[in-house]
Length: 277
Image (cartoon, rainbow, N blue to C red):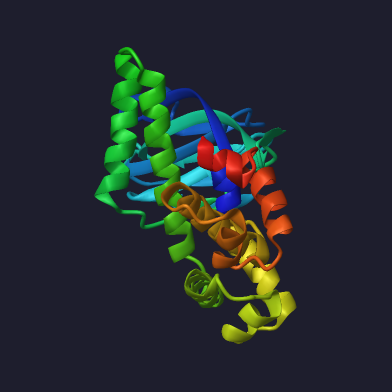
């Protein structure tokens, strides 16, 4: 799962709608968009139908989650006997990426990173999230956009987890290797760790380990390790009177000057300033 992507994910919700039997009766049981203009995340809760996107076709059934993004030819066909009913969130999004205390905005370039369609997402929790979004959006009470946005992010979290679970055995093994590497970092961060050493611990080549780690987390192994170390350093600076040099050594940095540069870049403050703050 690309957590770096999800950390920067910044949606602007435009509408929350329901496609039900009444809608399909008015649409002659067919919905066609020659070129989509918005991002759509939808949850099917009843009925059956067929979704076609740019020539690819899927069967829509209850507990199916699907997404569509701008620039696609989309068609949904259903029947009078069992019209497919789903909640649909229409939105736009960009990515807000932080480098230390500086932020950079980037326009969206494609789908969310968990697959076009996820079948069998039968969690009552996910159904409740979409149903609640629809009710709150329709109610238009004070703060409705914020509440729906929070619930939409929860839906994305559940969808991303479902996408991970539905991947191949090879992907599952890769995710397990990354989890083991992170567990190793958390218990050995005080030691001098290298990419090669971490790769050796999980039985992978250094190059493949780096590629796999970036795919699963969105960042490199060393950068992830440094985040763990800096988080521990913040805790020591808040809760102890250790000199900065000792804090640096305690969290695994041999060079205290490098630690200070890295800490300042990440927080916008030197370790001493952070302690006072």
